[in-house]
Length: 246
View 1: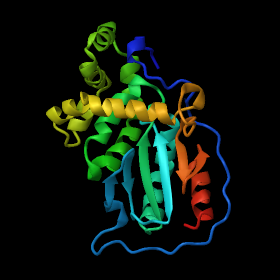
View 2: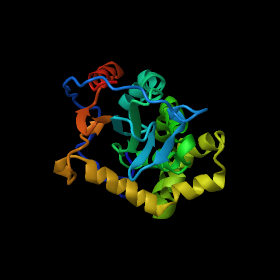
View 3: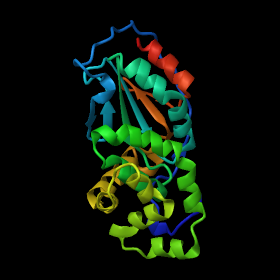
View 4: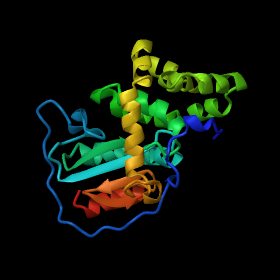
């Protein structure tokens, strides 16, 4: 990915897209739980302190992913696993799934994260999956940014910088086509409180060498019932879910 001025970059050194996996011990099977009448558990979505969670709030198996919307390994996991995860495991009421942003690429990750986190609970996961599906187009647009576009990003004041970057990446038109009005998108991209929160979340959870607590050394990092499994393929994650009793 093309580098931009240092002022645009976030402190995410030593983290990477992808990392090692880990094992898990066998647990007793858990029972399915019915969703409220007329619904399924994928319709139950709420905001948390660090992201958004889908599923039975009391699910005995809790899956958390720290991911980047521009990470190819995250995209591969979503492509292979999102549908079976939601259809088989979340809908059963056995598993809840929370996604938390981790800006592994620094500044380029910020615009899609800002747009994705401000749309509200119900659009959150559909938009996340659509961003993964269109990931290459966003990255390609940024890599092919003209010198004038690069200069515009670098010259923009801090409160406008990610809005300009999002425009270059084609993200504003992308979310407009999915029902997010331009004024709302602008508000998301210039929300300094959310920019600070996402930056702090990335720094706090990053590698210890970079001042974080070591939770995330690469994306996606998967946490299953509090146990850090690192990065897994869908087949590996599905086996971990079954081993946990799902």
